[in-house]
Amino acid sequence: MSRRAGVSLAIAALAGVALAWLAPDSYQQDAGHHFLAARWAWRYPQTLVGVWNRPLFTLLYSAPALFGYPAAKLFTLALALVTADQTRRLARDLGVARAWLAVALLFLQPAYFLIIADTMTEPLFALVFVVALRLDAAGRREWSALVASLLVTVRPEGFFLGLLWAFWMIGDRGAGARVGAPAPAGRRAIRTLLLATGGAAWWVAALALTGDPLFIRHNWPGNWGLDATYGVGPVWIYVARLPEIAGLLLLVPFLAGLGRSLRERRYPALTAPVLVLFVVHTVLRVTGWFGSAGYARYFVCVSPAIALLTLVGWNDFGARLLVARPTWRVRLGRLVLAASAVVCVLYADMAGFYGRDARAIADMTHWFDDHPRPVARFIWSQAYMDVLFDRDPSDHPQMYADHARNMEILRAFPPGTLVFWDADIGRAWYQLTADDIQRAGYVRLLARSYRLDGWLHEGRLFPWSIRSQQLFLFYKP
Image (cartoon, rainbow, N blue to C red; front, side, top):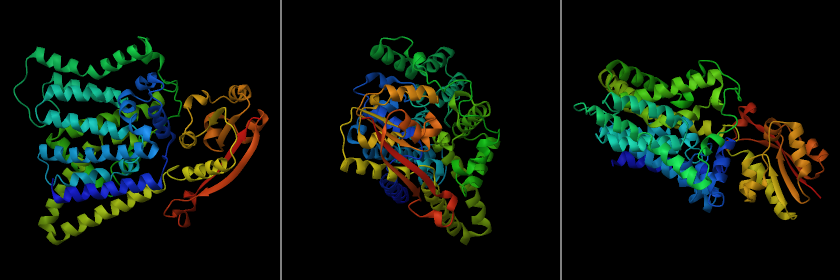
């Protein structure tokens, strides 16, 4: 490893540790729910084969999660650092110059930087993806297929990239740069069948743990249908989000690298996965199918390919500057990298819940620690509430976007039930307000209002970035 690559990894590690400390929760609820599933997986083994949580993610995180949320977040950081090094090695395998720069170009993608110390599933997917690409680039096609088959056990995008891998194998061109003589048809068929290995292992594990041969079908999330649960978006949704995906200042070299790779047909391993996900997620968002919500973080799945396409464009611009303005090349490059780092920090600090609600939830939790009551059951509106109380998630009932049904659930819970609620998620997801909970027979213990600014206090310049939140503690006598 070069010194510059090592320094880049060290800086990224420090940034990730800072994010884990300053933002103890996540910018979205998914991360907390993934953590809770992993932490309690050994008590509820069926969680290890769940469809929404995904088996490989839950299995790998079930060990660090036992040591708490910070440990699980730092485990993600470790995966991100390994991914960066593998991306650097892939650049070298493919003959892309300045391979060491791939490390920085990966972490300077805002959507990637945002979740390098989180418990989302995308960083693990990115690691499995880049390892599969490296194996294929080395000509180890069978091993590449076996690793790629695990993608479906991490995120749904694995199904679509699995189809891409099958197309590569049937054509016997592979994903990498090394293309040899075509393999016999029988061998190509066997290679393609290897892509079903991960899904088959998942089915076998689900059958062994649950006894239900149709567990995956029965466990399918209710909002993964064709009813546009989260609405629909315009066809240009991900074009608009490209600055979040590739980077505001790095968008130009990314598009340049993508365009050059397509024109010259040089790096199908990089261009094809990015374009496949772009098309698939655009269709899903336009139709609203399968719970698509239009998040930029979906493209973290192929972030190593995005980083290397950006590097291809970066090298192209660098070569032109070397001829036209040789003294500008290094200075301009450093300026772009430094400005991109600032953009990533601001993006993370201003992103939704990131680090903000967690401070308010911790404040309310400290109050309850100082004024304890016996808790028989625990109901909460945000996952981080349960993370801090460290209660069995099964305490929390299955609730719905149905006010009348949720009121019945609340009334049915026994005395000693503690309800930790917020005015945002609680109302938006479950159609319940603080007044509703009181009408269901609960006594209000505490209510506090918060105005939550980022750690850098961006609210002084951008008042709209300040998050207003109300939290409540209720108790059923």
